[in-house]
Image (cartoon, rainbow, N blue to C red; front, side):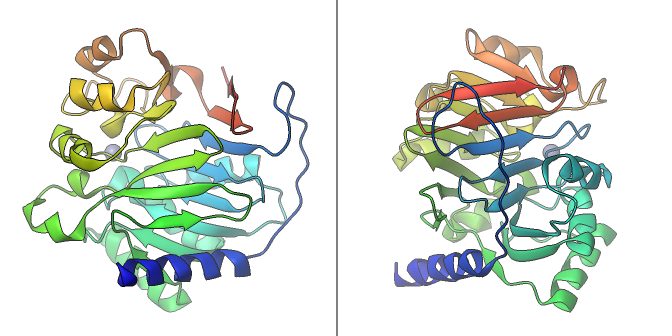
Length: 285
Ligand SMILES: [Zn+2]
C-alpha cells in the first residue's frame, strides 16, 4: 500500500509543477468549473483529451498517426506546448503511434503506462524519446489515484501488476481508469476484453455515467455483466469509418440497447463537458 501512495505522490508533484494557463470558454447550461473530455475522431484507434477545471491537460493514447497533433491544435492554444500527463493504455499501433509525435512536439510532464512492453519499431522509438527527454514514468497499478487540483480524480482500475503473468494479450493489459468529477463519472477502458471486464467486476464499484466502450466496440468486449455493473447512460465508441475489423460489432450495439451511443466515425470529435452534476455533449457532426 505504501508503495502505491508514494507513486501517487510522485504523479501529484509532477502535475503541480506543470505549466498552467488560463483558458476561458463559455459553457452554457453548466455552472461553475467544468471538466472537459474530447474523444478525437482520429480514425481506427483511440485518442482522448482531458482538461480539468484547473486546466491540467491529460492525453490518453494518440491514435494511429500524426493527426492527433492537428486535433490537439484545435483544443489547446497555439502557445501551449505542454501536456501534464500522457497515458499509453497499451502499446498497439492504433494507440501508441500518434503519442510518439506528441512526445516529440510537446513537453510532457509525466507518463503513465500499463507495463506491457511492445516489440514494434514505434515502441522502440517511444522508449527512446522518453529516455532522451527524461520524462518521469509510472507503471499503472489498480488502486492508484491521480488527484488533480480542482477535485478531479482519475482512479486506476487496471492493470493489477500481480496478475500480469496471466495476461498474454496487450489489449488485456490496457490501463483502465475511472475519471470522477463531483458526481460525474466516466470509465475509460482502452482495449480490454471480457476476461478483464469480469475481473474488474469482482471487487470494484464500476458505476459510471459514461462508458468508453473497450476495443472500438469489438464483440469480445463490453459484456453483459460489465455493462450492468457500469450501468452507463452514454456509451462512446472510438472507431474508424469502414474499418477492416467490422468495429463496432452489431452484437455490442445490441447489448448497448437503450444507452445513448456516440461514435467518432459518425459524429466526428465528441466533446463532453461536465460541471460535476450535468453533462453537455457536443459533437462535430
Ligand atoms: Zn485499439
